[in-house]
Image (tube, rainbow over all chains, first blue to last red; front, side, top):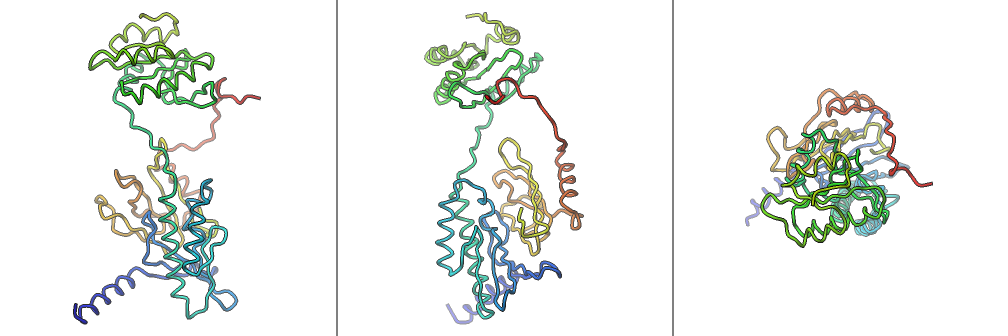
Length: 259
Length: 105
């Protein structure tokens, strides 16, 4: 690589930085200056650090932005430990969730860059370490069809209604008919779903007052006998193809259902 | 959002545990970089202090674009406008709990 090429690359980098970096006074009354760096947080927001003159020195801080999403998180301790470690490496302080440092004029640029880098690193780590919000499974096509059919018959139906089982756990009833305190759990036959339904209904069964139904999806063929045998222990088992026989009973809360 | 600034808020709509729409109001200077694979209608970078984040499949709320006409709005005005934009009717409502939802004394 020639010297000329190296210089050109350097110019490109400096040009990029010049374009990205900017400082702005927050307001005439305030005196704090926001410094937009060339760094980004994982969500795409540019890292901004704040500078103000204080007793002849310059205070630089992120005002807690790096860990803003973690401020009230109950499992923040590992992230806070990591933040302390990163700050120590950059020669800056981590106080009450803020990254902060005081420096002289001649080191201002260095510390603005260091604090911005630390903020970006910590935010990146926090994003990885944060327990992901539980993603709920997309609604199955069968559940949608059951829901539509019941509504077409003007049966009042609630979805994903919370009910407390004997254990104290609050389960989500996939379909809840409030008029008859009935729980309808559509089951498509996957064993993971079958065992989850068994556990849910088993717990609800021991809490008084619920009418529990397992609805087997037999559109593609007869359901597995093992599935039926298992769910019979905790619920009344009905089949989709025979819905004309049980929908009315479900609406009326009748204890008699066709076998 | 950040008590160190007079105008630093966000308003977010959550549907079934998923963040689907958000308005940000930030102190200056502000920059948001949209992802390279953003759909049409979203610039590479947004410098406006008031901007909206729109849910895009695979990108969640990473795509932003500017919101015009709110540079002087206070928190309440922004909130009212956000509710109007998202068809949210904000009013305190009381719904009696069902018997099994009541706390045991």
